[in-house]
Amino acid sequence: MQKLKHASETTKPRVALFEAVHPVAATILQEHGFTVDSMNHSPSAQELADLAKTSTLIGVRSKTKLSAQLLRASPELTAIGCFCIGTDQVDPSAAALGIPIFNAPFSNTRSVAEMTLAEIICLSRSLFQKSSQLHVGRWDKSSKNSREVRGRTLGIIGYGHIGSQLSVLAESLGMRVVYFDTARKLALGNAQSLPTLDAVLATADFVSLHVPDIASTRGLIGAAQLKQMKPGAMLVNNSRGKVVDLVALAAALKSGHVGGAAVDVFPEEPAENGAGFTTPLAGLPNVILTPHIGGSTEEAQEAIAVDVAEKLARFWTQGGTAASVNFPQVDLPNMRSGQVRILHVHQNVPGVLSKMHTLLAQAGVNINAEHLQSDQNTSYVILDVDAFQDTNIMSALRTLPETIRMRVAG
Image (cartoon, rainbow, N blue to C red; front, side, top):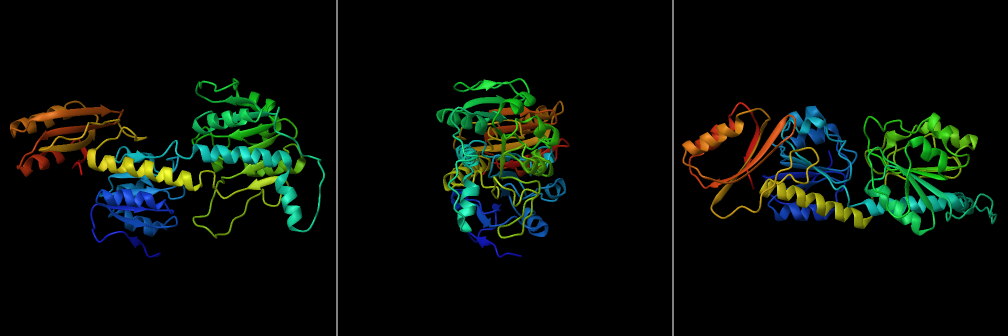
């Protein structure tokens, strides 16, 4: 097991950060009283299980998977930070277990958009091939297969934060932009929304994918979709690895129907740097392969670390879940002096709030502020009450049959 770097000797509360999360996250969490355990790689199953059992918070990037079994076996775990855009590495059962998830949906959008645009230019100019030839001593100053991107059509699949920003950047170079999204999205600039994925594939000179990893997007681009692309059109996938059938893409590249590709994400990726890696696309001309670095700029990683760490710290100290992706959205202003903030997660069934009010009233405890929100299965309430000495109140609230999880903020 890799030796962990302990930020302090305090044992609780404790946060475990995996996959080389930017150190500013540890600094922020230390300022809020946490012991921080940092690991530079995605942990083994045993490492993860050992730390999860004793951690109040866990921070991961894209490789570390948190299963339902692991979450159930981690009673101290209060919240999870995904230091990236996606949260699909965490099992959906987290919400039912009373564990909110926080991510950074906007912090690396510029980095991904910039890299995508750079790859489109490199593919259009065959820069990767030209560079590779010079590295082995071959001089090829031909303009064959080298074109400007100005005046050509970029098709964007998924017009969210990254796709829409790419749209603006591409238009600034004189590209025409068309896009498709399953949700209605307002076009930026002169971009044009098309009604179907097929319409974008048939129209675009470059197709760039910016979709999440969900059931409807896995295998989104296979042999049939590649055939619908214009002859010589090029594909960029900086979204999720399971969106594109790489075997089908390799065949389309070898046949010449697809003129080039840039791929940053893969169905299976190594857990740490330096590990071996293979892909059907290896060795093919005019193919740019990168090791999932779309958001890996210093600026993006620092911004992500600040964003997620502050959300985790706010949840721990104040109970706020307004930025959570899987939990009822609850928040209250800062607690006034002399009060206690109770954070209570319970089953969304009738009568629970009434029981809580009755217990507090019987103990003579006044409620000063309250915010409750519910989803289909779970309710979350923040209660600011007068300070009290009777420890039986907390025990009574915690042992309500509907209680999933309860604590006092901070």
